[in-house]
Amino acid sequence: MAEHEKDYAVVGKKYKQKSIIERIEALFLDNVGKVVTRDNIIEVARDPETGADPENWHQRLSELRTDYGYTILSKRDRSWLKVGEYVMVTKEKKDRTSSRTLISEEAWQEVLKRAGNRCEWNNGTNMCGLGEGEIDPVGGGTVHLTPDHKSPHASGKTIDPNNPQDWQALCGRHQVMKKHFWDDRTGKINTYAVVQAAPEREKRIIYGFLKSYFGDE
Image 1: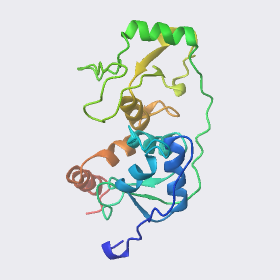
Image 2: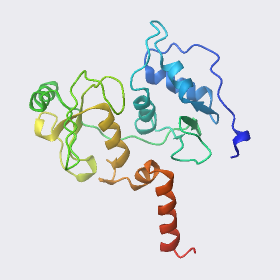
Image 3: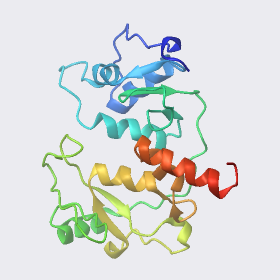
Image 4: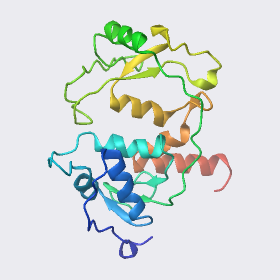
């Protein structure tokens, strides 16, 4: 799509849904196929009663993809989009149904105690360690810890809702990262999402490798 062919969304009404994610969802559903900008999202995500600026709106946007199943494209997906521009392709949702085990309140309190109320994300070298209520220096917004099961459902391991050792505390940014790059349905790395997240220069390197691998050049 050429630059002049873009059809930009115009926010011409107030969105009064209760939650940030519901307001952002309504914005995209009203503008399917149109380019929604970062400024559009922030405007809609702002509290309609208090006018308070939204925190972690980008995480709510990610949840529309990962939890709700919407196809929302960004610069990672289409070169003609600019950074901070997004397009919902269709109102149809991908099937995200799966049996999910929820942690018990008692086990969650034990996890938080073990973690010292800090994010336990560990990439093998560094631990996140952001605390509940702190400001995330990378993602922005206030840190809110939520429970995450250590093993993917596809691994076949039974996840015990009452066993703190089966769970970890993660900040919002690392919850989103795990959802993007680890596929619970297969228990494998989501290589497609990894390529999506790569800078354009690296995408071109990967593209060249794949052309060579499949003998297309």
